[in-house]
Length: 431
Image: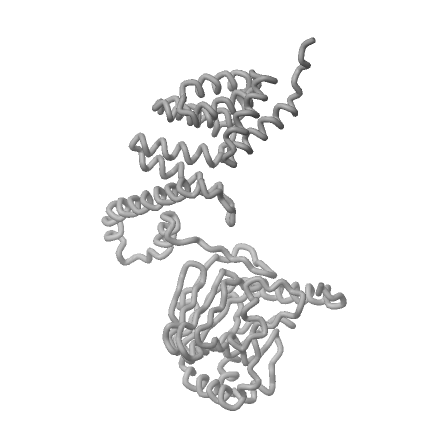
């Protein structure tokens, strides 16, 4: 009486048990199970593969190669078989054959992390660090953010990161030499955009894009800080810095109780980055206009500031804009990275009380505030702020229409946004 033909599912289950025993260090159990699998199906590709791995661990790469080539003859579409064969070729010091096996893996799975890492290390061994760095880069970008990698893989990942970093540094030095003459030829021309592009290519910076949380207007430039020359009226608001600061200081002295947390989400809202600042006076505000409505009792306290603001091209959307307020960031406080609601408006900062060590980042650019020196930026680009000093920092913030929009476009936005609010007004969206 002969044994029945082994069931494929049964063999795969035994092979899975072999792999588990091997990974957990139960060598004798792995050998026993492998013997069982070989007795049942000696020519099964997965059984041959496990036999090859056992030979590799035992130091017999030639026997492992023989097993794997037999397995591949039966199943040449399994990337693991080709990867194991590449390992056998490495042990046999056959780099050309190893590269061919790795290329077969990548033909089947172009983003195969282990194959990419091994290919990069093979190129390093062959004295090709530039090609290795490119392959290592391809390996690293296959790893999703937040992935927990096995401890055994970390040295290879670190090696790949070092290779990429060293190659980019060498490329940067090389390009600096090549660009020297061209930069001298165009010394008077602005090069900020090119410098940002090159820094991003070399991995030293990042190109940010607008990410409005509400209303994204198409085909407006993705600028972080806008050129000052686009806003000649900034001179007027800056000239009033002393009067504005005086009114602010009176508010801080006499109306401090009217300051309110800028971040004030209700219960049941996912806070994400705002958990630390929600309902906190560490970032507080004194509103002159809020969501398109004047705050009369506050405006009465700051008549010069209000007069100056009325001369600015404030955004005006019923129920939404303008918003203008004194923003106070407490000592040793950080406003986390976030994005604003729409790129149809831009944001103006006029620094009033800057104790030093106060930074502001928009996208890839970080600047220090200077008292009385205003700037305009797109708050739908990721931005954040720090007050690393021991006293509060204060600025005047207000929103203006994006000056690159036409009057007709502003009217259309004004009507559309008001319509969106009207559409949802009768039904609560709170959960």
